[in-house]
Image (tube, rainbow, N blue to C red; front, side):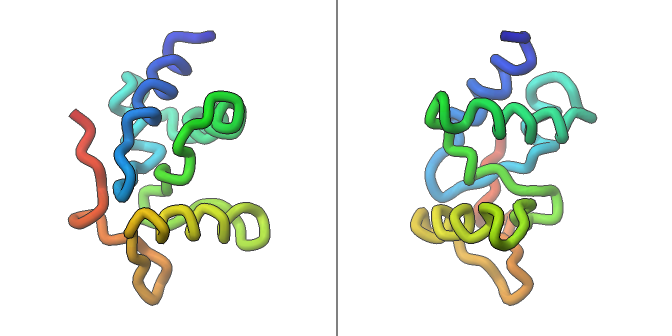
Length: 102
């Protein structure tokens, strides 16, 4: 497994319930600030195999990237069950719910 992939998996594993990060935040924290799409591919490949909290990663507009009917509803449901609230535009409040990666 590539070093970057290992870093992404380790970081995503630490996201606490009720918080989110963006794909770009993960990429930057793992040393590749322009690799948000690579983070998405890593999630797609390893989430089920490693039981990662994939649902806690959303896009930089604070919205779910998955299309409706293609995982969107499941991700939103999982976030809501952790206490995350969406506004009328399906956005998440970053001041309240974003996890600040240390």
